[in-house]
Image 1 (tube, one colour):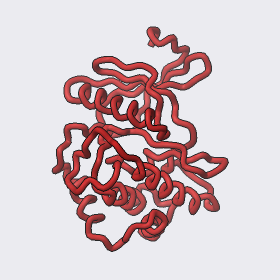
Image 2 (spheres, one colour; image 1 turned 45 degrees about the vertical axis):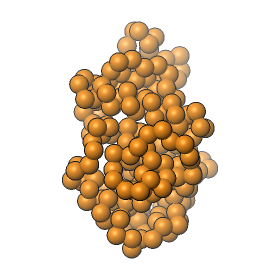
Image 3 (tube, helix red, strand yellow; image 1 turned 135 degrees about the vertical axis):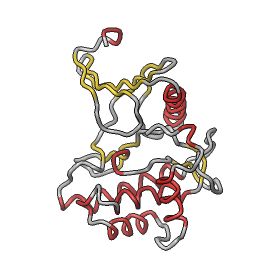
Length: 217
């Protein structure tokens, strides 16, 4: 990591993309280096494009510090991701922040990318809107941004609702209370928990039977 002038480097072992991710420290700031070969290299480039577009419209996401043919260097996103342990008294506000962040994302317009998922394009969708990818300020309990953006594009607003419903219901984030938390999230967003698209998109995501060209998580 000498080429970035880093004084410390630590591998990040979370995530399922197969990409190599390293946390760097440079002059007191934390940076994240992501790299991959073959299809991963193309997906990393696509993710960088999406981050740069989001930043250009003022939506909070990791700042692209530098990029290359098969790598990406980003600044640390402020806050803590929603999958981390949160005090019980703070959890309702965290769920509210998840809903508010999604409303802000959906309100964007002019997205130059398409979602890899099918559906009518009614919103800018994240494409992997789950607890680990959404950040909240631990002091104010307000939404601070999103990461892992390779699937971002214009799509059906119920896609991201479905992915967060699954994230809150599938047992990986039990601190929130399971399906009841998922229902609270959908209500806070202003959606319909009984809409059949929720289960349809969960099933589709789990099957991988969509256009996975940008499937870097």
